[in-house]
Amino acid sequence: MPTSGPSITDIKLLFAKSGNRCAFPKCKAPMALDNTLVGEVCHIKGARPGSARYNSAQSATERHHRDNLILMCPTHHTVIDDDEISYPVERLLLIKQDHEANATTVPEEEVARIAISLQQNVSTVGQAGGLSAHTVHANSITVQAGEAGNGLLNQRQIQAVENLWQILRRLSAEFSSVVFVDTILLPKEMDSYFIGADDHPMMDTILEFRDMRAAVKKISAAGGDNATTERPFVSQRLWSIYFVIQALYGRSALMLTNSFKQERYVDWRSDSGCDQLLRAVLPAHVVEHVKTLQVSGLRSAMDYLEDQFLTEAGTRKAHSA
Image (cartoon, rainbow, N blue to C red; front, side, top):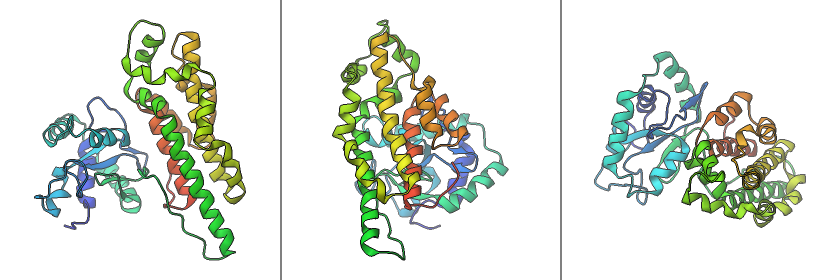
């Protein structure tokens, strides 16, 4: 067995036992859509020194064996790696055991289809050595210059893509509270907060969005006002994807502003503006999927959009969403 990472055989077995669902309790996020892997293969004991729950006494073979692996969506992979105290090895092993014992086994023919995607697209990402076909956990990207053309122009094009990616990273930080509450609370729970029926302390993180100017200020703080200077140096599609991501952050934040004004939760899932933005870049079945997620839908939408950005930038092989 190769020791540089999990074998395709082990990943296939994990997927077969997963029921095509994230192993995190109560999460219904799929691990694959059609023939595309969208979940992550996470290490229970970290893959490398410094990663969550790393055990130096573990052999490379043991580290990458399926017994040390668990399938999760990108959001919950981040959750378990960012909170080792709440998610020690023992708890994750129980989560894995319970999930696989209660999941509906994926048919062999479906596993075979996904295997093709696995072999073509899987790459190592994340601090714990997670594997994903569509998610990059990184603050910077590297774009390769074309083989032909003016060298200075190529350098400027590369710089433009990297500059836009950095703005997207800052937008993610500026609007993190918007994504955070959507990740941990159900729409009905958020509605109970806005109508005054229940008090959710974590909702205090979005109080700043009572100000209608908050979203505009955050886009400006992230560098969005200067993004147009990069537009001549990137493809039309790359610019469109960037614009949709920025606009979706702003639009979903505006929904919270409206929620404060109307004293009820205005869900981004039912907003025609958010729907149009998503459909401008993503396939219809992906848009419908993220809108059905009662938690983490916004995070999943951003993950898909960022994947499209990175694919268009040439940092990975293109694959169907």
